[in-house]
Image (cartoon, rainbow, N blue to C red; front, side, top):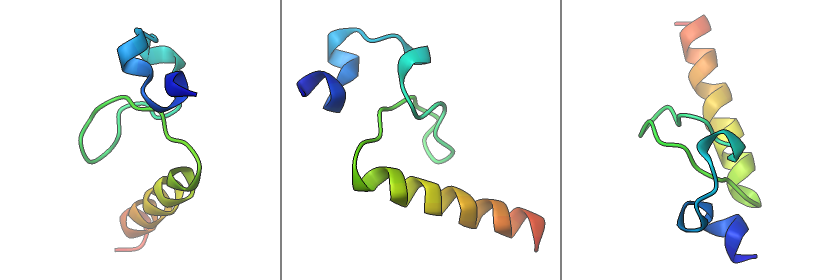
Length: 53
């Protein structure tokens, strides 16, 4: 399970990770478990603010 949590140390390519270019820090990352829900909620809130100023 270490590969899932820290894929960059195992030289997993960027295109294989599930979080491409995070909005806040611009990095590629692998999001697992509850963090997926939090990231999705953050993204939706950000998009709502863009659509309804």
